[in-house]
Amino acid sequence: MKNLLSIIGIVLIILGIIGVSYKYFTYTTNEKIAEIGNVQITAEKEKTVVISPMLGGLAIVAGFALIIIARSR
Image 1 (cartoon, rainbow, N blue to C red):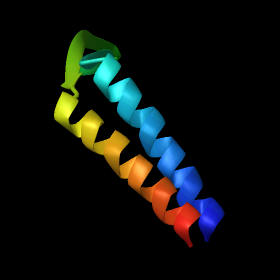
Image 2 (cartoon, rainbow, N blue to C red):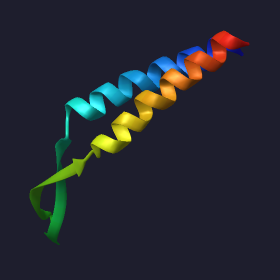
Image 3 (spheres, helix red, strand yellow):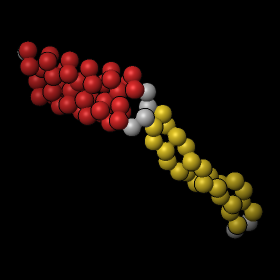
Image 4 (tube, one colour):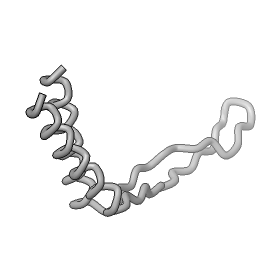
């Protein structure tokens, strides 16, 4: 149980640091607009996901808390 809490804590800290470092990330999807017979018309759309710095900070704090709890047991 100690190892599992420590691993989860470390993962949360790493994800929190990434979340604070990168404010957002974008990705591209292909969406089908129309299909006429064998011909398909598609469009590339770029989507953005915003990561809140508060969420990244909360993940870092929670990760440290889990590591402290695991070590105290």
